[in-house]
Image (tube, rainbow, N blue to C red; front, top):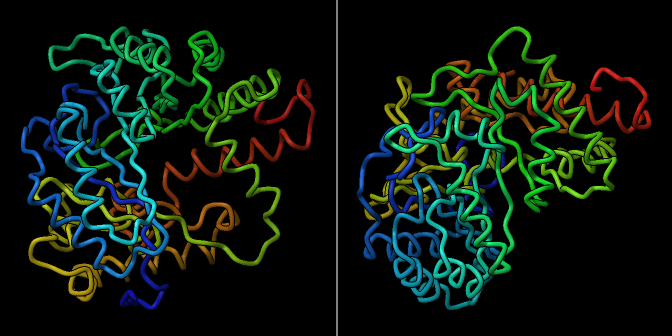
Length: 387
């Protein structure tokens, strides 16, 4: 199935991001979800239609991962997901590998959830921003109370039940002064797999604490210090940003530059609780746009993937994204290590997919590349720009 701009063939599907409910039991200050007070849920009928749609789409080749996200998935009961897994199996007669991943705020984890995660080999990601003085600044209940204590109780429950997990920590302007404290927090709590997200500008979250003039210098220092701490302790902590970028840097003389999932049509499909779907950056679904109205390109009940991709909205989005990627490829020396940047960041920072550099790529790509290159060239203890 060809995308209309001729950039590449659609798929294969790698991530199916499903919103079982938009509702979230927390009220984080940097959240971009516009409908997180809604208690709608994806019905069994819609779940059936989603997987019928996906397995008949022509983009499923060797399996994919279902990511339950875009709200707090664990506000729905374990039984909901038991039925969902049965529905997946009913539409997957070839027995392709379908994994399941939960991204959760962690406050509802109990033994029943741990049993479910183990039984179905679920990949579990917990959002925790570090020590309470950092975490509780932004990750609050609807009454404004901090949540770090409850999140850590959930993490300890995972650990006592021997459920593997990783954590995602959002870096804000305040976080950048506390590399050592964050590192010690992970070590002391036996957290061994860490991913850093930066506080992004998306949808209703129209400003970031990382937008100031001095942020790049501070971010560079934070990343450099954290890299040194990880190296000092012989990789006691695995950091997604380092683990993914180091092999790319060491192999950066290759000629082929694969597109990232977010730039490849239908490598990611995102479906909300009403069956509306889109591709490219998952965060786009549910957000509004002056250019496109919204970013949904169809509904699984009424549309096929082919009809959606031949539709006027997808064609406009896809062509704009392709033009932006061409500009990145032609003007940015980091392109081979990035693949062109995430569409959602381009749109909400620059006002168009047909654009190039964003705050996200300056910090989360360029600075990280520069720091890692400097650190690989100098032993720990030798001053570099990333020290």
